[in-house]
Image (cartoon, rainbow, N blue to C red; front, side, top):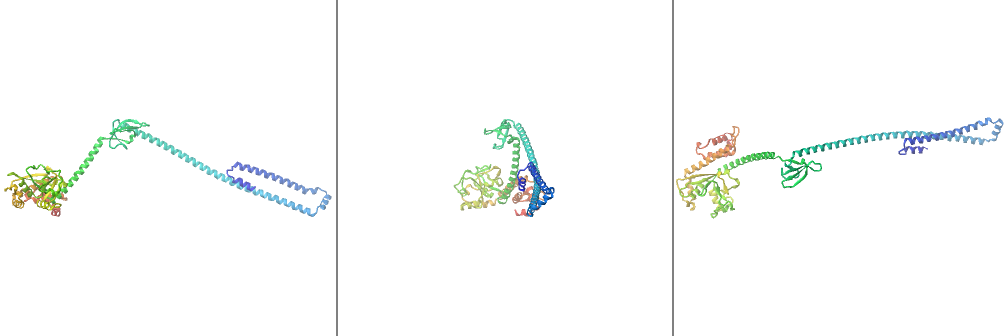
Length: 475
């Protein structure tokens, strides 16, 4: 019985109705057993009362007949039945107690499972409701976003009139290289058709990828960029010119010189054969009449000697003074030290302090001077190699050297005036630029007296000497 109860209680999926049915059946069987025991007890009591009814004689006779062994056996049998009944009752009571205990445990377990199941169901319902709410919100958000995007597309399409130029993202190679041809194309009627300058047609273009080309705005942007580039270029050119002037002032004295031939007007100087490709040694060959270089010298007296040799009869000698700061640095080839030349060419280049300029010298770089010395030099004298004797004689002509100093000083003053116009006048706490100081010093070296110097060069030198004395003395 106990095992049956435990089996029922432990059986999975057992329900309260099944347990109640089993309990009802169990109690019915207990009632039947109690009734059977009651009947047995009544029979037993009747057997005990029956000897009182019997007459004394019969009782005496019965007692005499029964032997002591029979009475003892009957007593033992009766005691055994009582013991069995007590044990049966105890077992039944134990079964009932166990059944009630397990019934309570099963009811508690079922109650806990029901509570847990209810909590789970409630959580699932809340989760499902939250998921549904989130899905509705996402759907509404997507729909609102799609409506907003469609409105934006329609607004853009209205702004992109037929024939307007656009730049298409992912298609255009240049800004404004496409023309709007058709509106409201595509499945949703929210696209455009464009034609590029190469006549290629693109349909179903998203208007959000088409940027209206604003030519006026582009022109403004180009103008701004151009102004910025121009400003930077001017600053760079100014800085480059400062360094060029400072370098030439220290090395070349700012000028190169050339004695002009009769066929040279001085309105710019040109190489005899700009397309030639002679090396520098070939340029000094006597047979090389045509080259890509123009021969200049650092010494004005040498230029005068060649001018005298090139002049015809009593015609004045013409000397070209070339401003180095106006020439392209890369076109200037200084060979006055003879570097890179063979011995004969090097000797000539060093004695004449030759500087070669490639192809062309512009008019703005050339200043032509004319002189007529007190003595004449026959044209053939250079051919007979009286160069050294002629140069010695030229040194004694103070009139020529006075003119040379004046030419140098006047040109330096002109350059200095132009340069100073590009710079603000320094105050007492600042100083003039290095290239201005160097040129002012060259003016001073070309002047014989203080009256030969301009007010500007005096001011620069005084200012520089006062506030930057060491620096001026170095140069």
